[in-house]
Length: 618
Image (tube, rainbow, N blue to C red):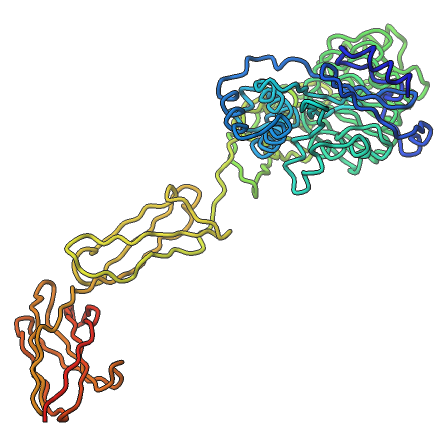
């Protein structure tokens, strides 16, 4: 313990720690992990100047900063940080507030994986782990809270998260995973939890992250992904690899961990770096449909039996191929590959092509796709007529790391993100003849389904004004639909009668049929101004209401709730006196009146008036 603490003090101003020997270049298998046993005891430095973590073991695990953000933090970011933390009492609360806000603010999107500028991250609201970490870092720095953006690179693709100093200690949090339903455990992470995220205790929070990145877990027999390929991990079951994207293979991509890999086809690779295949791999066959440069020592694996080298290869380095007696190069006559094999006494075989390809025409236009329909069948025309070559497809994108589309060996393009891509068709007869065509990939807005349209009112009283009930539209997810997606048209909505409201949909709801709703406009009511009683008769005086009115109705009953009421209709809106006869003497009667208007044989009634009462005389 004393030795470790001395080490902490000695490195108080050092942010970057070297990764220990235990962090070897190849992933450690579950079996191998037991070889590197250690006591799980951690010391997290509480010194403000040095956010470093130490293991109380023979090894150190490096947590280091990614450096400066590479941009000046915008005033919008600073203002948002100040706004969010305005009511916070201390730095601990501020860190908590910023971390949770960033977790919800950013949407995880591989298409924005190269977005390193914190101002661009703030505007786009998209990115990968680095976006969460760097925006959080920038906001805390703007509040003068010591913080750091940490990157753990035990293996590609790595992961980024944060540490922030609350005045007494460093808080570790991972905003990328705080956005999940169980995200709280990723805030203020303990060392035990941090190192438990991988079974052998050496990875940081990379385990859940690599499922979202081009890191091959090895559970597929046939793979094709993205533009830059990361290592195939230990225990892979991959046997065939068709690399449909990418301009080059980076170093350390194919390792001894690829114990099952037998065949790899690269339809469009410009350069193969040194020492890619000198590991103890099981790789036996490599097919290069198109390549320009093969660097020294590229194909030295003793397991290799055959490498197909196209005519497009113009540069081959020294000591490229295996010297195994079972190995050979397949190439066309008169090519650089043949000359190289002759000069270096490499066994080779001339590929016989009776009708070599001279040109290829790609039959493809811009592609529109949706989440439910994102696969397009590709086709190409090979010349001359009768050429025997098949076409190997690949795709190039300007993003360099993550593609907008991928192409499988069966000539199907799967759109991943909207953007501009270049389709590449390569002849497989060794000629290396290529055709390229740049197209746009456009994502169609997903069609939405309307579940229900309702109106706020179905009955209005005539006031001489246009009546417009409110519209509410609900989609199949029981969510309200914005009025931006529909147009409302009213008709016959002023005078007494039946009015209509039509709802026509647009945008992502355009596939829904127009909906028509009806509502009524009734005449204004009236009242009884005077009632005169006799032994068997009541005489009513009616207040005139002639506007939009055809006549009146009076109902009367001995029950104040109007049970069993009788009705008298006056088909004249100018008659203002009504007599009700054949009544019983000394009996109390209850009365109401309403107006109506007749339109094409249909009556539209006002509401009944208040209830009046009158007792007949003796």
